[in-house]
Image 1 (cartoon, rainbow, N blue to C red):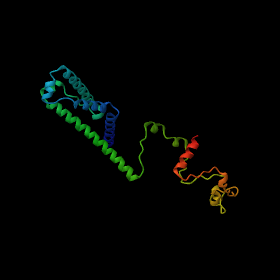
Image 2: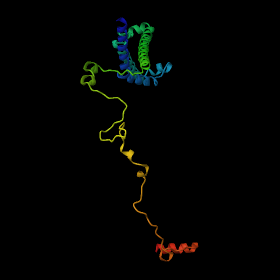
Image 3: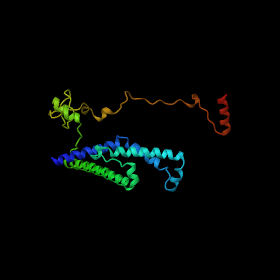
Image 4: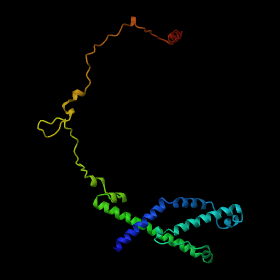
Length: 228
């Protein structure tokens, strides 16, 4: 029973981590924070620009948003099983390692939950490969209400047989149905003329509008004649 409860607990925590990383605003906040941090000066430049309010005020806003985000992550009991509160500013001022230790612990917990989720996925994939049957996720509504096939006793014919209409004729031995196209031969699909067409002899040159042009001068003359 303890093993089952631990597996259910790990599954619940992995689902909470998956929801937090995909559905919650955490990815958006992390992307915004990462984009803002790239343009912030560091080391000596930071202390120099921090003397100006145009730089100091946005940095304070970023710092406040970062702290709120870390507080939400640490207060997530569904993710870690227990709350890991962010250290206060007073504790951080007394000892800089307090914030670092908190961040390391949170990272370790998150990575551990990711490993649990990956192990669970690998186990389910191995079961599918061994059994050859893909395990489909069943919703809670289906478990409570049941499936329609179980409820209405629907009989499904999964045999690999072609459809045979009752009006189709059977073969001479009566073992199979005959397709209507089987009665036709190849010649039935060849286009045939309704009647033989007799060749028509062309008219003589004397009665046809034909003009023989032998040189360029004659061609120019004929072109002027046509344009007129």
